[in-house]
Image (tube, rainbow, N blue to C red; front, side):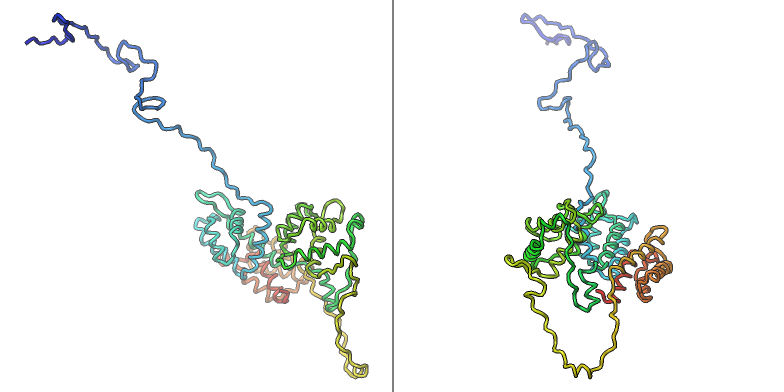
Length: 434
């Protein structure tokens, strides 16, 4: 049996073995190929199913993209949203009991385990509802947004600043409104109103807006706002909040925004006539108090206007009040005549409120570290001094009750904002002005 030579790779047709010289392989080079061969310049052929940019036996992942900075959450409120929140908070916070805000603050601090002054929005919303501060869903969202900041996982709320806002709102809610028209004259004359003063208008508007036009305007406003719940206090606050220059004047657009925001839905024609009637400068600026006086007169009295006959004169067409029968002169002579007494002057709410602001400012100024808390004896000393100087006539029992109710159990000192609001509230309750 012929054994093939190891180097024989094939045999010719005539049976002669064909010897093929094998090429010796050298040591591998740094290029990775066999010795003596140049390294391939192109990439190695890939498999049919390999679509990666480099080829090979593995799939190539897409490049990691830079996601960039996360979109920052906007925690600010627009001007109108801020005004709406303020009006809603003032209405709701007045319904809280005297120690409601203090208990709310204590509960929020107890939940703040990190003592960093912030809590999650869900925690704050649940605590507000727990302590009977029932805001609308939009109100809860806005108050958390107003005092919110970005957290690690969820938005957080700076509850200490929120409580300061609620306390100041309660103080403003307890502040008595300014006296209505003819309030002082009613108190002094015993119910008899003085004759109305002549209407003061700018000479530029005398021809453009006459008394007849004013009467028709009052009648149209009465018809359009009849049986509609309107809040004059909210409207007044909204107008003054929109007064950015603090000059007591608004533009026409600001007046229309305030009216629509507070539910005074008037037709464009009536709005235009109202603006014409209240333009005292002739420059398109409208005084806030003049607008409020027009709307207050609309709420107080019902204007009688006849299209053909104009205004009804004073005393004409109005049923006179029937007076009781007077006794005979002889009977009057026999009846004892009571001694003449001077009428007691009416309580001037506006003057008392202005003087009370000096007391509040003095108490806040005495707080040297501006922490909002002071010892009870120091608060009583400052408040009693200004009570005597401005003759506020706040009793000692009212002082003691306000001090004892305003002491924070955690600090052992008086919460100044709560004390100022509570002292005013207790004094008015004592005078039965609520």
